[in-house]
Length: 230
Image 1 (tube, rainbow, N blue to C red):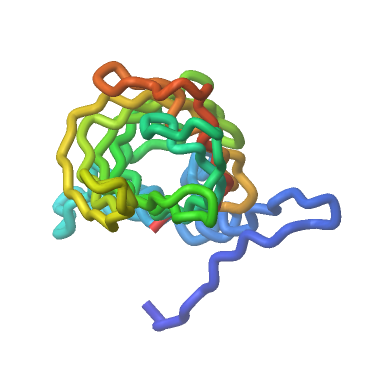
Image 2: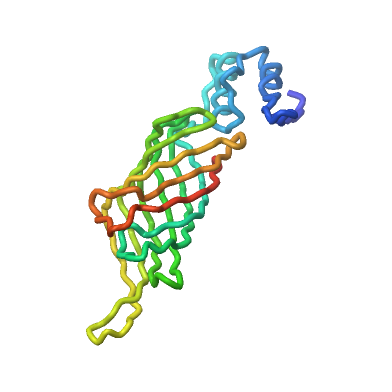
């Protein structure tokens, strides 16, 4: 009513625990409305404010639609032996990735879909590089607010590949190819919460596939990354 703006704070104390001062602030501003399950996230705050407005004004109707899904953006880097490509010397190559995860709007979402872009680099010993765009599904087996462990499957992928092969005259030829697959590549991963909306993630991305053959080397495809909620 007086136009005053009040900051919502969630600072850390000396032992690294969030003080959650925003809960007391909002409780005071809403005549003691419970903030026990309130999170400092837009979806949670929106729901809280709509609930309060409805409690003090029977005619109140929200003019905004609450989203049923949330987004999480992640970046990662690691190493891969390109397990589904002929690699007789089991050479490891650098790997970088970018991911957009879509999940249900809840404190501990169990189901998620993801769009992922990965690039495996060529090395001096392996003349092969690929950029992969993939669509997948993730299910969190262990699902806590501070830690989750999940299994995932890549349902569809589009690969842009560059490699060197021998022609009919045994001459090296640089080739490019584009391939779309439904490979059903399975992997596992874990997210460790390090901030109110951020996570460290460890992914074993290509453990095995149903519709692609392993080329003789045990899969080594590991990435370490960082994710944050949008």
